[in-house]
Image 1: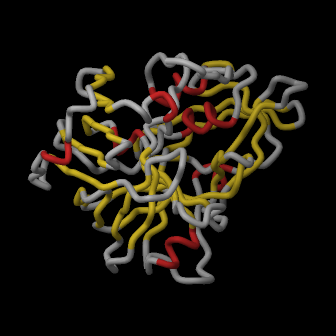
Image 2 (image 1 turned 180 degrees about the horizontal axis):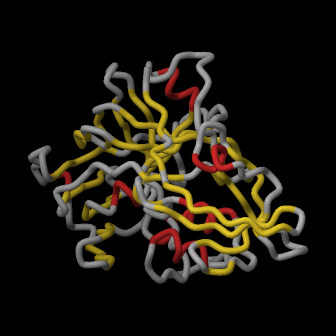
Amino acid sequence: VKDMADVVQQPGDYSFSYNTHVDGIMGFEVIKDVITEINFEKKKFIFYPKTLDINKRTPDNKKTFLNKLLPIGSGSLEMFAEAPSGKKLTLALDTGNSFYATTHKDVLERVGLWSPGKEAKYMTSAGVASGVVDAFYMKMPAMKIFNVPVAESHWDIIDLPSSSAEGDGTIGFGFLKNFNIVIDYERRRVWMDNFTGQVVNEAEGDIGIVATNNRKTKRTVIFKVSPDTPAAAAGIKEGDEVLSVDGKELIDVGYDRFKNLMRGKVGEKVKLAISRNGTLMRYELERKSLMNTTD
């Protein structure tokens, strides 16, 4: 590979998010001129000669799917998802994001899945290119994602209008890990083989707090407590410092890692040691499903 540049950043949160060792993320630029298979089943990349034409393959639309890339996005792979209304969402295929799927509240309004003016419950935060923004979780109805029928799924919703005039969001690793994916960018085709037989994601439990590290004190400080959540019911407050989670001391733990520490199976309990103005308090909270539902 010639004339490539790399960006160095801390990989710790990558490894924690994916639950495996990760040294970094390889971007789209590396594969755009090569027919590439991302084989999650065997955990490897396979590079094919340009004589391979996946457009000649016949999908059964049950296990195998052939998608056409949309003629937008110079540095992304954009394809359609379809809401129950039949209206389309333009979503990027992005194995580099650990979540299942994300979109914006105004997109949900456009496709008939959210009423204008309706307030979301269980507000949390999400990290985007511009920083940390308000977000919420949502249980989605039966729909098609890249032509794949999905009976039910749970998405991250950004509580801000989309910053792109073309794209509506992203389909991430949580969905794509179930497929071996062959990408032919030149012919604008993507082949997907559902080797796991799974496409849905279980609703994760949470307790309703968001925190990040204070660079001066190296402590993890809570900056959001969502109403009607286990944390709010227990009396946890914004500004409280989280000293440990399940007995493990937190030192310089940032937003992404803390978010993953809080999430887990519904019904599981998490133990927190919290300092408020120098007073130590201990909590044991049960994770709940903090999901919004469609209209």
